[in-house]
Length: 85
Image (cartoon, rainbow, N blue to C red; front, side, top):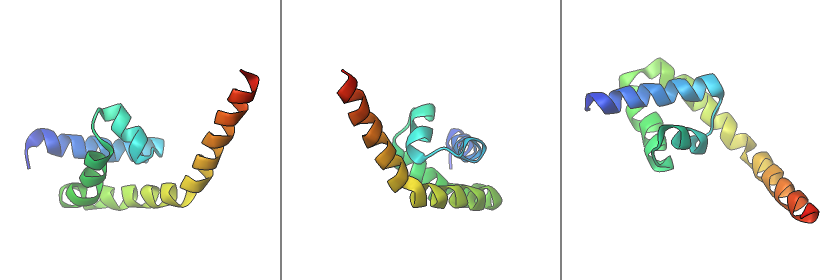
């Protein structure tokens, strides 16, 4: 694995843990695709830092469990804003 990829993988993992970010949020911050973030944290991170990978996996699992709530909130805001305009 190239050094810049190794560094990015650890940086993304650390960011997700510190900010409880979603894959989409991490992708935006690091300027890569959601697919790249997902591959970094699920496939590459365990070989680079297994302990960090476990912590990231817990947060991603929590995000997955809560995603229906976030989606509903986004839709509610969308239509609430549309009513005002």
